[in-house]
Image (cartoon, helix red, strand yellow):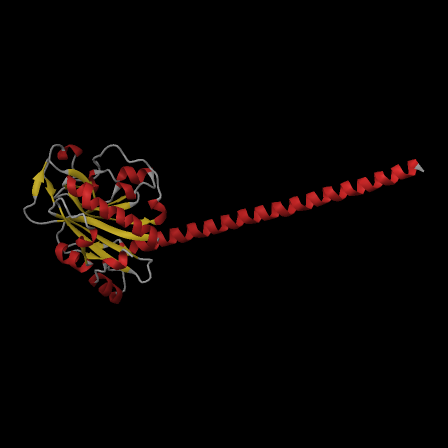
Amino acid sequence: MAKRKTSRQTRKSRRKTNWSLGKIFSIGLITLAIVLGIYYTAQYYEAQSANKAQTASIDVQKYFDVTLPVNRQEQMIEYTGFFVSFNKQYHIPNYTVYELTAKEVEGNESRAKSFDRDEKVEGCPYPSDYTRSGYDRGHMTPAADMKWNYDAMHHSFFMTNICPQVHSLNSGGWKRLEEKIRDWAVRDSALVVVTGPILSANMKRIGGDVAVPERFFKAILAPYANPIRAIGFVYDNAGGQKVVERQAVSIDFIEQETGYDFFSALPDDIETEIEHSCNYKQWNN
């Protein structure tokens, strides 16, 4: 009798063990399926986002075109992350233009340590042309906007991207505007930013005949905002001007001062409306 009882207990124990192993195996399969499902779903949406971002980036370049006054000297240069319209007569850019996305703002590339002459560009000055001139080597396309890529960062230190700026402007009001633009890029997904000097007759010269602008502009477009909007800023090449709002102007104003035509790829009715507007509160809400 005792032997029969032991046999029954053994069979019962085996059935219990087999059921437990089966349960564990089933749970493992379900867990694996869930994990794989989450992984491949994430991969799918990441790919979709990348494709969307790439498409948006290509499409937005239609807003990069800037029409200059007749007889304005220009050499267009494509760098990683931005374009430069360079003027060999003045040895400074007419303007620079680029798209700044929210993701690019998050970059962590270290700041380049030196400025370089672009040997391929006629009239490009030397970094030494600014030495002891009393002016900073002021970026038109900010280095901090190019920290998403090694090449973009180092290309921003080519002298084709530089203008003589008073130090108190470069490290003061102008820097505050650049920081504000990065905040707006995060909020609006992406911006198109056009920056440059306002050229004028009889500009002061430094070094190897490098022109010193009296004023600078930024023309900014939020192409994915709803509604689409644009705003401009003009700064004297001087200290002060630390309140960004006080420097805000319409795109129309910049066009009048420079003779340039911005964002002509927009439908005429939209271009007319947004270029006439100067609603800083709409941008800074």
